[in-house]
Image (cartoon, rainbow, N blue to C red; front, side, top):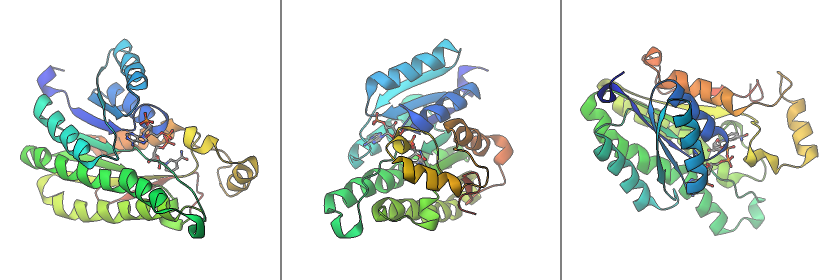
Length: 247
Ligand code: NDP
């Protein structure tokens, strides 16, 4: 494939966990992957993994809680590389607390990274994608956004809003060849879930019909499909990858 034909995929939260797996997978699929997160060292390690395997990657550190930085990142990447084919909004955080104890800051932190950054990134990706009359946006939500979770009103609100954002954007951009979909992971083994207590982990597992935890690669495979040409007729969809947990 010539450099001019190579698709550009920007993945946020690519330094570890699900985002890292998505980045590795999209690189394997042939895309030039723009790796975004705060930790530059970890991003560089992911980039090395990709280039060592014969792929191509670019490191772009960015704090997604800074809306102006997110705007510059997406706009600047599309300008620098001359295209933006795939945007995966994966970066996310939790600041769990019962609602009575939840501080404004905990609400704002989660809403800024998990929702506002997604809106800004989508907005800035829209122009290059519309111009190209093609594009793929995949937003990582959560089953918590679909069914709720005690102690996570901030996180659940942001993730539920991503579903509305995804469907609205899918309607806005559909006629121009741009698809917008969401993936809702269940309980996936990453840093984010390693902090859960053993009793919570056990009760979650008891509710998973497939009887095991998900892996980052399970999410990466779904994103890879949604980002591919084969998924051309799917838009506004939310795909649960949760072992049946939220069924
Ligand atoms: P991790 O905590 O393992 O990784 C989070 C990623 O987001 C890291 O790469 C981190 O990089 C990045 N990130 C966090 N804050 C910022 C920020 N302010 N600016 C830029 N990057 C940031 O999470 P997971 O891999 O588990 O989760 C990935 C996505 O999947 C999230 O949106 C999460 O909500 C969702 N999800 C996860 C589930 C699970 O079970 N694990 C279940 C359902 C949804 P760095 O620290 O270097 O900035």
